[in-house]
Image (tube, rainbow, N blue to C red):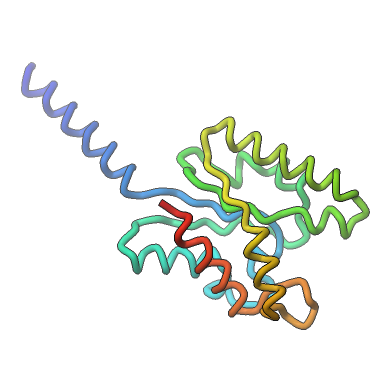
Length: 165
């Protein structure tokens, strides 16, 4: 009986250790997150995952970018896009709200609601908007002026890298 108890304790300890060494990260948003205009391997979620693995971090980064999505769209798919076990969400959403006639205040309210729901689930949220805007200001956009080229996608990943623990 005692041996069986120790075996259970050992298995639980192994599961806890395995979980702590493997963090689930979700990049959530619209077409910039999806990697519109670049290959899937050049989109920042994929680049970030490779950068993390190069540093010896066994993290996965799930790309949950959907072309044309809005804050209300993200809210509608939040539970399916961000599964149980997710520890960090990198959030980049809101521009399509404005393009579709919503006000800045409405887009911000939707963004805050997404963050509140994720925080209620004890998920850390990293705002990727500052890195997106910095990449655009540095000329790392596609000719449409909205989506990022491969250099812009790499820039976002490199800026996010030190924020992932």
